Image 1 (cartoon, one colour):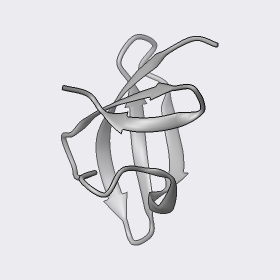
Image 2 (spheres, rainbow, N blue to C red):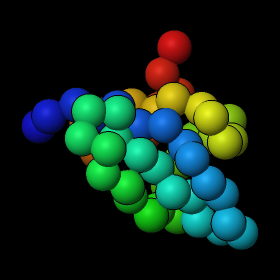
Image 3 (cartoon, rainbow, N blue to C red):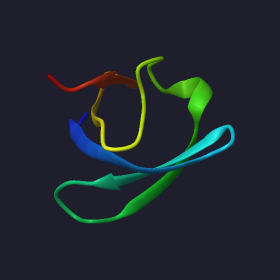
Image 4 (cartoon, one colour):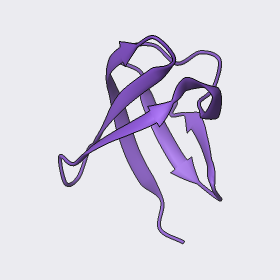
Length: 55
């Protein structure tokens, strides 16, 4: 499975909007599926069906 890199661009209640760093495509996802540290501007990596903060 391909690794994806995202930036959190917006948080609205229990949902976040992520922007794919390569394609610019936006993804709307439940905050419950994201790491606790997720905030606007945070870089995330999607790998092995889970999201993690990119260091």
